Image 1 (cartoon, rainbow, N blue to C red):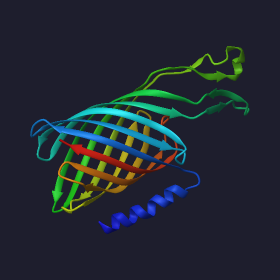
Image 2: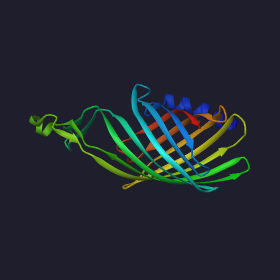
Image 3: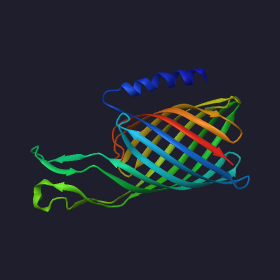
Image 4: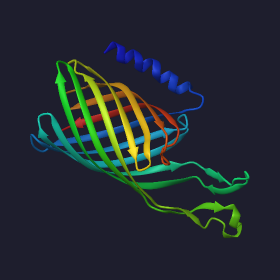
Length: 245
């Protein structure tokens, strides 16, 4: 537990001071209702900041269901509505002249997911593997793009709609101390239609506040290779509150 906390304290300042990367915060609230021994439903809200805390990058709201198939295996499904910030961007011709300019805008996305999570306890250490299919649809955005090769058309070119399937693989280690702190470490990969999109690493701890509520504090590093909606390297301080009833 001490090693995880020390690592967290070291990595967060590294993320804040990275010159070429981006730092932000990911904060959220989750409500979870247990319907039976095997079945539960939940809802969550999340707000993400970026550009070194200068912008609100995303807010989202989601609902989901969990069903325990066995003591070690859980099935889940859910839907999330995302509202994202897109900064101004440019494309250029081969000769270096400006081709298109996409204006700053906020856009909606709709995301569906289904997953299986297997877990096993080895004393106080819990190891879990989650396999998740994710489908995201971005509707077309009107009047957001200027084509400099057809200047008379002005802002008539929309940002086209887009659909994407992603397979996510997350391996997590959690140390269950039975006390206030439950430190964890996980790594997750994202594989899209064109290959390897990105990976995410996180270290942090769950803090038990009561029998029904808990707080999560962690550091996240994310490196993207081929993801149009989430470019660049991200460093984030993650804070989440969860209440079970």
